[in-house]
Amino acid sequence: MSSLPASSRPGHKVLLGISAGIAAYKSAMLARLLKQAGCEVRVVMTEGAQAFITPLTLQALTGEPVRTSLLDPEAEAGMGHIELARWADTILIAPATADLMARLAAGMADDLLTTLCLASQSRKVMAPAMNQAMWSHPATQRNAARLAEDGWRLLGPASGDQACGDVGPGRMLEPEAILEALLALFQAPEAAGLAVTITAGPTREPLDPVRYLSNHSSGKMGYALAEAAAELGARVTLISGPVSLPCPAGVERLEVETAVEMHEAAQRLAPESDLFIGCAAVADYRAESAAEHKIKKVEGEEELVLRLVKNPDIIAAVAALPTEHRPLVVGFAAETRDLATYARDKLARKGLDMIVANDVSREGLGFGSDHNAALLLWRSGDGGVDQESLDPQPKREMAGAVIRRALACLARPPSR
Ligand code: PMT
Image (cartoon, rainbow, N blue to C red):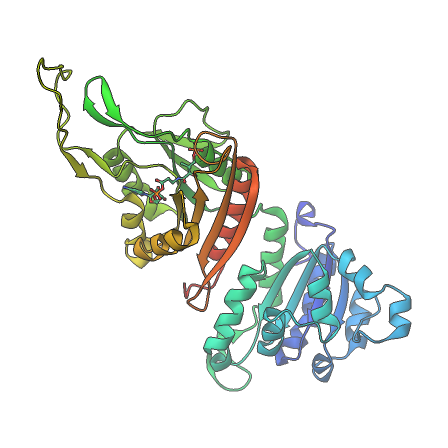
């Protein structure tokens, strides 16, 4: 790995956490590779890890004292644990055992390594390593999903022969692969390489050549989402109803008028997308047939009866795509009361992974405004629904929060 180009040497401060797995012997090589790649490396070992590899080995390789205990006054007199937590740009745990994952998922701080993880706001990455049955156990899968939701990036595990004689998933990735993935993370923005499709704005359902049914959506919320996703490095396509907004930089825009046109574009793009967000205010009904010529007022007739037919449910159709073509699907719910109840119902009924419920009756928020507030609901790893409330804020800020939450759902193991 010393052949890495100089440009990929990030000078990052990496806190390497080692827990009690047989793969801990590979952590020595990992520490060496990190140093060679230009990282500053400090090592923290759990008590159990020291049964597999000695702190002295890691100290010799990194040139730094290795920390093993939270309650060591001598070590705390040097770089205290909070200082250490602040020092790290990245916490990398390799190997991460099932026990450590469980403790981290539960938010425990019962030794130095878990305390540092809780105290640090740095990027957090782990390379799980354990017996294949332990990895496949629903408890570990639940913990892995929770950790991904909490922002951890899981590298591996790989599948193959295990030290215990089993064969299956649970092997720690090789140190070279961990380093490569880590360097890619340093360089890539959070959504790099992801294809994101977003619907925005209203639809227009023609009644005749000069009249249509529509709504008050300005497109601001959908365009803000597109901008936020593009800024995080995603390849974004905006399927936009008629609005008077410029296309955000780096975003591809596909202009449509009607719900049927939006539906066709979504069906074409969604199977190629990693993430699909339905922010458009789609007309639920359209005229059964738009008049060919302008509808004339008829003398003596006080009523005009329009026959409407249902439009396709665009987002429900995307959510129903076969698994291999299905992106993560995020819907919006525009409600005027009982936000959580209606949003939960839409999440379930439309088969969505996440929903952004906004109260469109609130003054200065929602339709047309530059601000919004929302209740986010998403399916958690254990089959339940988690939620987060977003206070009134500029739509651009809220868009960032929505995209980051969707990315966390996307980063979960594929059991979703
Ligand atoms: O555009 P702005 O002025 O910035 O306003 C933003 C907004 C209020 C329009 C936006 O935040 C919002 O709430 N968008 C969803 C509006 C809506 O149609 O909500 P709904 O509850 O009726 O629909 C639920 C979901 O189903 C939405 O994701 C919608 O895009 C989707 N849908 C609805 C009907 C349909 N035929 N097809 C759909 O895909």
